[in-house]
Amino acid sequence: MATVKYHKGDMVMGRWPGSNLYYELKVLGFEAKSQLYTVIYKDGTELELKEQDMKSSQDFQPRSRSRSRSPGRRRSRSRSPARTTRRSSSRTAGAATKENDSLSARKNLKLKEMVEVRLTPMSESAKAENISNNRNEKKEENNTSNKVNGSKAKMEPERNQTRYNLRRRKTEGDGKHEPVDNTKVVSTPAVTVSTPLDFGGKLGAYFWLLFLPSWVLFVILQVNLHDPSLANFPPPIPTLEDLWDSRALGFVILWILFQVLLYILPVGKLSEGMPLRSGETLKYRTNGFFAIVMSAAVVVAAIHLGADLTYIHSHFLQLAVATFLISILLSIYLYIRSCYASPDQQALGGSSGNVIYDFFKGHELNPRIKNFDLKFFCEMRPGLIGWCLINFAFALAEMKQQKLAYPSEAMILVNVFQLLYVVDGLWNEEAILTTMDLMHDGFGFMLAFGDLVWVPFTYTLQAFYLVSHRNALSPPAVAAIVLLKLIGFYIFRKSNSEKNAFRRNPSDPKLAHLKIIPTATGKSLLVSGWWGIVRHPNYLGDLLMALAWSIPCGFSHLLPWYYMIYFIILLVHRDSRDMSNCRRKYGSAWDEYCRTVRYRIIPRVY
Ligand code: NDP
Image 1 (cartoon, protein in one colour):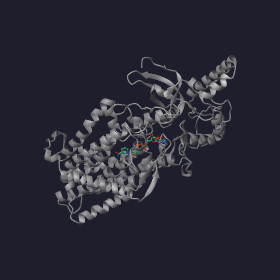
Image 2 (cartoon, rainbow, N blue to C red):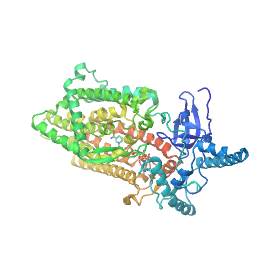
Image 3 (spheres, protein in one colour):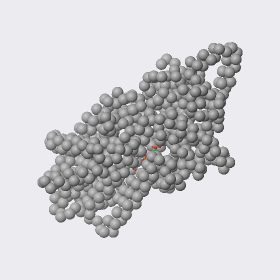
Image 4 (cartoon, rainbow, N blue to C red):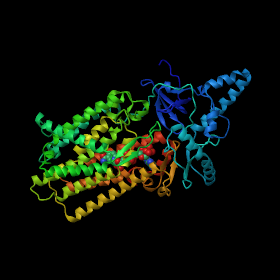
């Protein structure tokens, strides 16, 4: 592009990702290298858009002057550019110019108002006024939302007891983006949308692609050492034989196919995911609990028939390498198919245009083969249930190696705690549909490797360590660790369930006591209850549980504490990723939330 068409501060219309609807926005800048404009919609959502997805405000017909906002009326009164030309041609040039001037003045005022919309704590009088406005507007919001997005869950009712509200334009009603009919744009080129790059950007993607598999290799080799302390770093380099065993590959394939079979069986609930950008919702077979029960039954039957599960311990490295190979093949498949995905199906975060970054981060949001959802399956089944299977195999290996009649207390605690974590996740499987991974992250190497390799082969490190490193625990120590685990679990479960219930049904009477902050997207944010204590109470619970998993391994080595250290880094980074995503999504409403709920994960600390 030789010249830059729009400049910083320009008010123009921009296409909303995955739709043909245009909204007013302000240009924040232009990057010559990527040829992308950074823009901000009136609700504070920041995106990068191509020039072809932006249009001058003059290309759009102004909306009806009427204050009535019935969608039916609005639709009939909003006009296409073609109609504008016809009408203006039947008038005198002077009259047309005068009207255009006045429309343009009104439009400029309107744009200014929209950009200046700010979330402000309200005075009692303003609140009363707003509540009454909202009552009138609410119905229209819902109509508009259903018409525009075709999504029933997009709008959330407002609550009178809420201290916060969006200051809305009275003449225009709600604080949402006002779509402008643009019949000129019927079929348009694919929208390229992207959010700022995570994980160190393009260079970071190269780094993680190399680092993550190397790290898994390192921790497995290190934990195999008699003394896995850092003084014995680096562990001996493995031979090809140590790395590869065709039988191990066969077992991994068999395990995945078995989980596929359980997933596709018409058993269990069909749950609805959150509305996508297109307004569509996907259905998921949430029969994870059934899958783990069936898996346990098959494992018990296999042991009964003479299968030796300690094979998993003695061939752990080969099993990890085989699974790594599968995750690479899956990621390549995911990347290739994502190149053919429609813009609606692309993840905002994995559409940088850089092959390596998009391969790593995941380009397609919900890749499916017919109704088989690859991301959901990998997140919840082979790796997660495999984690419990491996832990159980390590308990058997400990008994064999240390000639014990029963596993040690530490091994029992680690096994039971982590089993509880997985069973809880599968019992509440529906809750994953409102998490970042499912809603926002594309499915690429990061999640495929994370779900299939990272979880089962590094989260099991504590049990692996205990196989040959006994750590005796006194009964009071056991009681204290159990208490810690229960507290963590309570916080984790309650907070996750509260947010999930709210996202699924914002008008749930059980949540009526909670305060909310409405946002310009139509969704609201919880500002009391668990989500009023810290911004990520679920992370706090998760971290307490991680602590309870690590203490049983004692303090002689750093390696069994690896999960705790990694998890702190992961959740702190995840929290900051979520903060920037929510800031982009919710704009000033998010700022208000952050001002009200000051701490991120640990009250008064962080
Ligand atoms: P969350 O479940 O916390 O989801 C974050 C999303 O919740 C936000 O993007 C936003 O989405 C919504 N949200 C944020 N604040 C509010 C609010 N105040 N009111 C209403 N909605 C809000 O994040 P994760 O997906 O990261 O975590 C899910 C669980 O999984 C956590 O318990 C975490 O600890 C656990 N986890 C465990 C891992 C492990 O390896 N063991 C790894 C990663 C996570 P929107 O507004 O769009 O709905």
